[in-house]
Length: 172
Image (cartoon, rainbow, N blue to C red; front, side, top):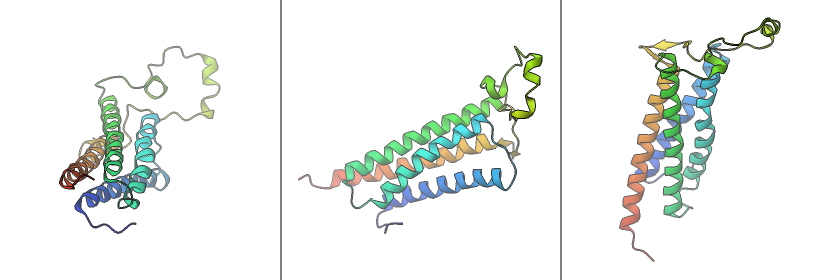
């Protein structure tokens, strides 16, 4: 990675590392641990796939980009991970039966016919409302919401520091 000389970029680096190890862990649980992600689990990966490349490029180009652009990119990634908090919290609510999830993975079974039964072996449907794993009462979705909150806090701290630094610099 690029040489880091300011605390603001260190907070962004920390956010990147937390996000990177989180998505790597999700893949590890799937590929090594045998946990099969449901539709909502897969949706929760999208913010990582979008946010981490943007954040990684921002970190690498930290000293080359104008400070305003760096700040805007950092805030963009923070917004992406706010979406990740929502996705994790929504999925947790589905698991705790606070609200209904998508019918594709937590449906009511309405409209089932015998023709549908003939191709059951073709598709494995993983239920979104039954967590495969809980540790300390928290599922993968709950941990995603918590970890995404940490990422947002780190990015907010970086953004705040960047903004303060910009205000101190004399304008040209």
